[in-house]
Image 1 (cartoon, rainbow, N blue to C red):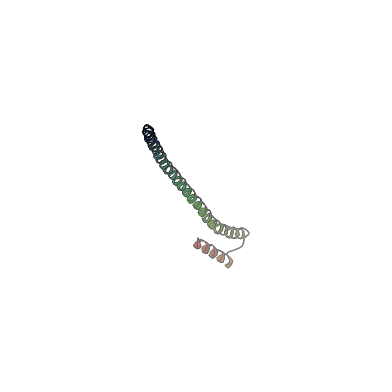
Image 2 (cartoon, rainbow, N blue to C red):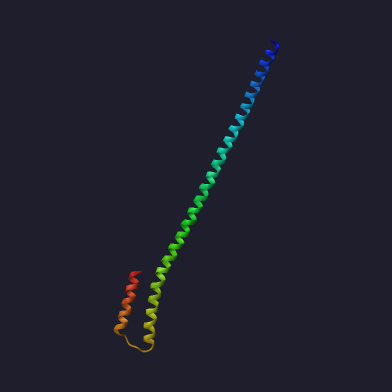
Amino acid sequence: MITLGITVLFFVALTILAKAKVKQKTKELQYLNYNLKDQVNIEISKRMHHEKLFYEQKKFADMGQMIGSISHQWRQPLNSIYIISQNIQDEWRDGETYVQDHEDQFKKQADIIHHM
């Protein structure tokens, strides 16, 4: 009987000790889980911030390309107008009088300007 009593007390003590360990491990897991949620939220915030920066940089890069394209579209016609004007000026400087060819060149300039 004494042996049975000691065995029961041993198992009761072991059960109490096991419950205390389980409770302690449960608290540790809850703490780790809570911290993990915080870390996940922090990382999500960082990622969203980086994505926003990337989007802004891409937007500015696209805008730069668009401005480059626009300036190219303007430079070519302006260069054509300049060449036509230089040709007319050179002809007049050489003493040529106003001819129908000049009228065609003026019309070409007007067409280019209208297109722009």
